[in-house]
Image (cartoon, rainbow, N blue to C red):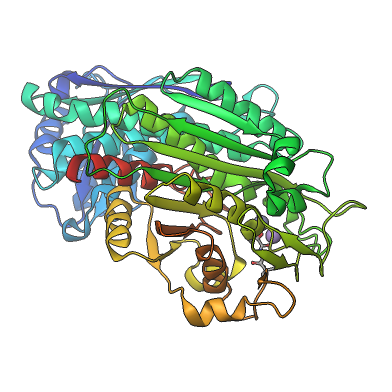
Length: 511
Ligand code: BES
Ligand code: MN
Ligand code: ZN
């Protein structure tokens, strides 16, 4: 894949005032009090930072910044002060967002090199490795731009950026470093996910996605990629995936990625299946969507892409856990060969489904992949999908819906959400919702009433997971930034990569 911005992240031991760089980045809490690093720099700078504070030009409020030019008084060309907000509200994500804001600013300033000393404001309140990881992730998130198809890189931005995470104390540099290494892997995986997500449906159709998965797997010795094409899907009886894909010239695929670590997983670590919805374009099919914003439906593949990128991160991290990635891929289009409302589809599990709305296609492809995962004896199954507009209505674009049959799995995903900054909120599933999904003329129907659509959809999926511990992440609304944020440009967010990777890292470390 074309590197859109080549970002290099490293650590360096250096006295802050002697750090030769284009921009030295420091953070300040709004209720911070005197800061050792800033104090020492300001002495050399002749009190410019202090003046900003006394004049009220920079108070450390969240999302604010001030840029100072050092005029040769320190080795850095510029000092970027970032507001971190109230100290008691600070989390790892505060640091990640600050690093991202700095990296984004660096791209806009067209500088080559920046140095992050943001962690210093946090003192020893957070583990150093976790801070290193958050800053490295932030560096990738904030510098990300998508201008693959814009001639001459759109804004004339530079093609690369070097981000150094700096500290004057060698022991601190040492304790940041392992986190930085992990953060680089996760950050790059997330950027990969964003680019794949941003690529339009005429570029990424199901066969192209399958090809990209195989290409990726070829670079990862511990990952094996198998593709079921239409013929194999038919032989296996994957009627849900076939039905959804039947309207498009681009034929559906089931992408299977098997990650087998070289380091043997410990016995308590379960085998995990990650199942991601990859509708490369969702027009709604015969139950066609309105024209307004239909272009956004190229992002309906982002659950599948999150799975693909998570597998990449796991393999590069060499995490000792067995993971099976399953990505059902199809394009949902209306045509003479499309599936229709009223059709009764026999799914891979043998359960039949009456189609009431061809726009409820996500569950139709996921049910085949989930039943397959259950058959592979995966003890934990996590699916991730831009499944329902109803989830967006419920939670907005701030948190993903989380439904599950297992409280421990929920707690672990909530923990991972907190650490990764990719938020989730638990929503219910179960009997009363499942009741709505019963059909009079088939085992199930694919759409319920107007109400509780995220929960009825999850309850539909729940009927295909066998005896596994299962969690469902409804990421509708989380897949795309509609306006620029600290995390960079509009478009694909790569949501789920940090969440799932963190869940798996913790699974290995804490059992
Ligand atoms: N991919 C959509 C859900 C979606 C909508 C994601 C908006 C992101 C933004 C999904 O396939 C869909 O169309 N769901 C329907 C289900 C309904 C027909 C039961 C929905 O939510 O309206
Ligand atoms: Mn749909
Ligand atoms: Zn969809």
